[in-house]
Picture (cartoon, rainbow, N blue to C red):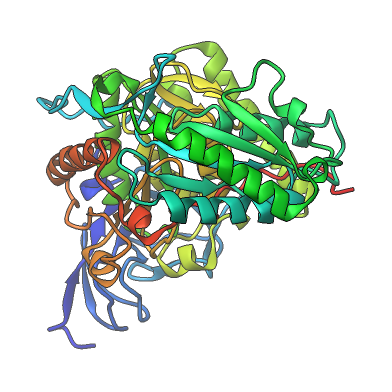
Length: 515
């Protein structure tokens, strides 16, 4: 062993975003890769690295016996599947989830609201709709009722956008294609979810005008989506109009009539209380819970302090950290609802031959995340520290001020689709491996967990949270992120918007049998 090679190990609980719990964590985080034999400076002394360990991965701070709970952030992230020596690599080969439970229930502490930090802005520049709603963008959307009319919807949007591109005050004409709408049973939960999702898009504040394109014979008829009014949408039916060409030409005429009226709207100052921010994370790594997610949590707290709404979702990615959310619930009903959605998801995954621990992807694990419990403890930090005021179903309207939890899958496009349908007019997306996600008609700001990722993918990432490895840095970077989000709400173009992302990313949650 070469004793000259020394590497400090960062215990997550002493530099991470939760309240420090010295002496509680069993693992530390390596900020650089180490070779076998490198002398590691642990919290209670030194030990040689038992094997080569990549950067961002966990190392045992002391001997951990087989069957013992293993802690990070002061919380259990799994159970040792084998004896793990001090200096050993802690990962999928020796750590998993089991049925271990804390013998003494406790209320887990959360990071306090940043002291002395308050919102630096009180308004954004947005569009005020005639019914009073606030918008961050001004789009014409073309929505198919069914996959069978999706190509026609794309044709219409592409041709109309080319004609009206550059029109002042118009962000574009876009199609929102999806692969559902038929081959499904009416009146089922899956049918209800699709209707609620598409209704949410048609009636979204960022949609200045909408065309609904129906084939004519599908299960998901237009009246299913518009039972209580037209939401400002006009329906064109391909079979009635005589086919593709006739429908495209008719739609282009309708849009040409609409655009002059839409562009009379101008951005005006609107209180930040009318922003609804959806929180996403994808392509996560071990730095997600150390930098980007707690930084976004500070920005979320600042928006809540300004009276705005924040939406956390991805139910499989709160499993193992759901007690932290439950402890923040302002009503017994919301606390109970958290437990109910977790129970439903355990049954849902089991019915499909899976478990919630199948959620971490290959990229997540390559980035140092081992179990879903560990992933969730980092993911929930996006929500900051504000009280949990409501729990709603997928694509349901978000109406409560402050923090709301929405029951969504962990798959980013599906989760974001539900949040947009629920009324989010802004999205923030943290990533550790590099995500290409974008969203329309709602802008999405992407945040890197490391500066290395930001430098590699400058064309896709909007904000570098890599340096925010301490609470002080997280407050400073979180305030800057809050400013960037307000700027984006006011019209600043995100990287994904500049690249043209967002027209393929609407993915309603597919539930139930395909018939």
